[in-house]
Image (cartoon, rainbow, N blue to C red; front, side, top):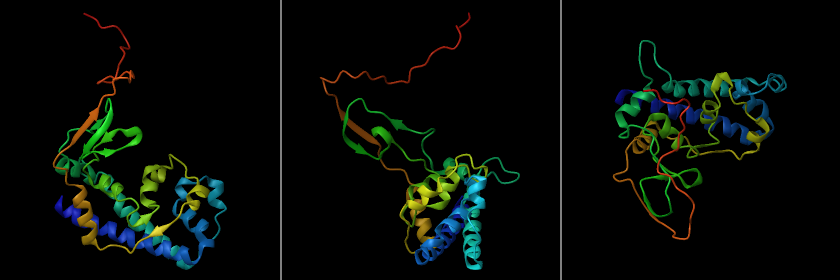
Length: 227
């Protein structure tokens, strides 16, 4: 795992450098954002929209090829290698994650103190996963925003399970910080692979609040039990 982490964080650093180069090019030539970013996400676009993107220049093809190859190296961490049983990301969970399953907490009252947990949607407390890909997702926006690889993978990648609304994506502000070194990426990833020393939540029950609360999710039997 230590060797994997060393190689993968170097790949992430290369990806961030390639992303910075493309975003810098588009800052100088904003009129080229549709053909360039459309080509980057062509797997996520309808066929008709792909055909209307237009031709790329030699410089643009080089930038996109560099970024595409770097992205592939980074998302390979999610794939099971030939002859293996687990992906490198799955192995990282076995190594770093102290929890046997995803941990979320829905409090029955207003939180007074929260330690260790992250506040997710609708106030649900959750513990971020301790794996390579979870760590990368936690770094979203630090160096690239929006982050192409996270968008691409979250929408199904080459399968294009969730099409991308290119106009909406192009309307988002773009930002690229100076690309970090491999050592800087590794330091940031390792920090996110380290659990908090304590996970604690305190809450207050409001006596006048009669909203029902169940500690366990309800379930129903699909068929009667037999003796």
